[in-house]
Image (tube, rainbow, N blue to C red; front, side, top):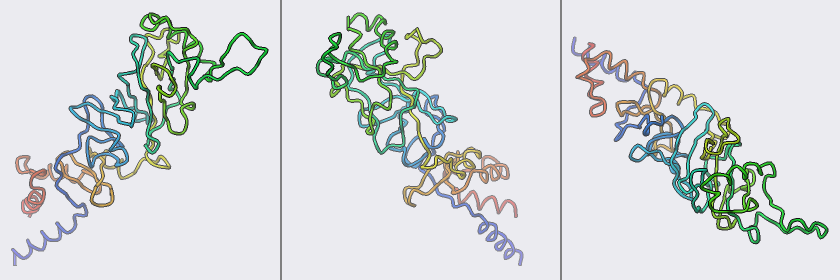
Length: 303
């Protein structure tokens, strides 16, 4: 009767486990280079939020943001305020000016421009650029064009055009136009070829030095949302608290999974893994290769 009792006990213990275990081919990374990866971002397929998968990739420990206009390095992610910072290698700064095709966001993506973003169009054609319109006031002969730009941004143009890299081009200040995200339209597109401007500069902070463009925070700040209500999923919070990484299952209608450090995927959290590791000698725990065998070994050990 003793073996029967063991079998019944073992069956009851195994059947009481409510967390389905799946062997994962590759564990989700917790970092990409020096940037921590948390929901909704992930290091690869099945990690993070499925909606972010085609926009964010981690290759060779470099986090990259991709849109229809190109690929852009991610420099930082502010998870508290839900802001991601990217840079554009073709963008002009106070230290360097170069031609660019522009920047745009995919209209169906989960990203939008941050209110702090300031876009400055450089070397725009006064005669043919659509950002200028003809002046129909026949009594005003002082100017032939009125810029359709932020009037309060004139000082920004002055500071940028005083930078050595830009001043060497001897461009008139009238060829500079300060855009704000609201000016980019519903498609979030800034096509410099259509705007007939040779380059652009973007920054998201003066860094307390409004009069010193050399120290401005150049780059683009992008906001992101978790969902239509912008609610952080409770299941994901529990997963990350247990040292897991939130992910999704491609075979179960993108259902939620929690990827544990060992590589196992669960539908809840990774606390069970810590309990098993504490119950068995370390050398007997081989979750990533034989998860079921490890569970059986544990219960046989406890009986």
